[in-house]
Image 1 (tube, rainbow, N blue to C red):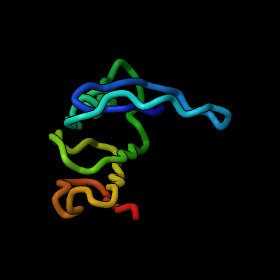
Image 2: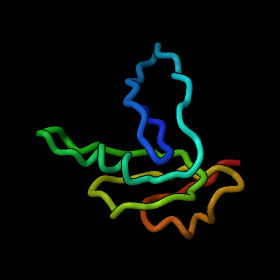
Image 3: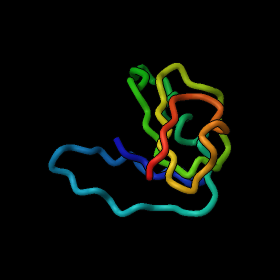
Length: 92
């Protein structure tokens, strides 16, 4: 599933091989908490196996979840060492 997030969460947009990417929604400041709150909702669902978050790295972080997270930080984004948890890579 794909989500767009700023201070609000937009989605989920189910992704399949034949899916076209939806038009991004939102913009402005970022709060990572709504995304992780959504993933952490129990309702007898399984926790995600992995979350991949594409971001500039500037925003409000929640507590570290129980599943692995990969932060993909764009060029010019936050210093990867300032991301408090998870694996981090930078795009060029």
